Amino acid sequence: MAATDPFIAYKEVRLDLDPSTQGSIVAIRLPAHGALTWPSRTAQKRPHVVDLPVAEDEVAFRQRYIATAASVYHRGQHKSPKSFLWRVLEDGKVLSIRVVDVVNVSKQPKDANLTLRLSFPSRIVPACIALSDSDAHDVLSVFVLTESRHLYTLTLRPEYFRNASSTEDNAGDWCKSFLVSAVNKVCHRMVALAADVLLLSFVDGELLMLTRHPGADGMTDSQTYVCPTLLTPGRLRMG
Image (tube, rainbow, N blue to C red):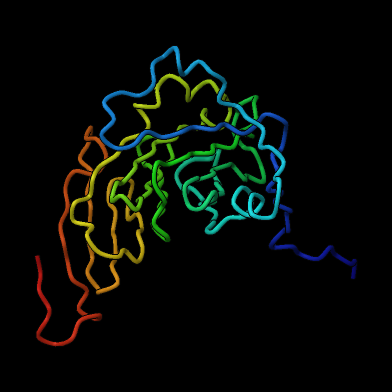
């Protein structure tokens, strides 16, 4: 009987965290909530593409390169870009997002080799980053909750990871922020149930569901629930 090659169900691929090419990091500073306007068109003409400087010491190296939280999100609705690596850097104030597709199955002639380095005005709450895929549009929805109780909704299109100039003059269109007044306690985790529904859990067992209406800025509606498994008998309440 002729010998056959062994069946390989998985293939190991090395993921290099260094920039794939020089000048592939796009640095974007997000405005604080309540800012009336984004920087002027003239001011935004300054180059966004940067190269990270060499760390001067161990403290600078740890803040600039070592993530305090990270994960890979795989989209299920669209082909490419499909897999995204996000990392929290710079003492919790920077969110780095890059494409980590193993195979490019799209018809785009240019690879998605840019890394978006998003700087927030306040620290990101631990375990409060959620990503979601849209059924209707080829976009990646990124939700970030900061310590100032502001929820940032980022709608990232595939071309943002291919062309650095695509994020320069329209940041107010793809970045929205919303003050979540109901978040007045320690948040344990945030997950995206859909592209327009978020669920937040708190350390006392309370759950907060946020729903985004079509065309609204960020999240504008909320309903509060309480998880019965985390409460003692007699304390259950539904709101």
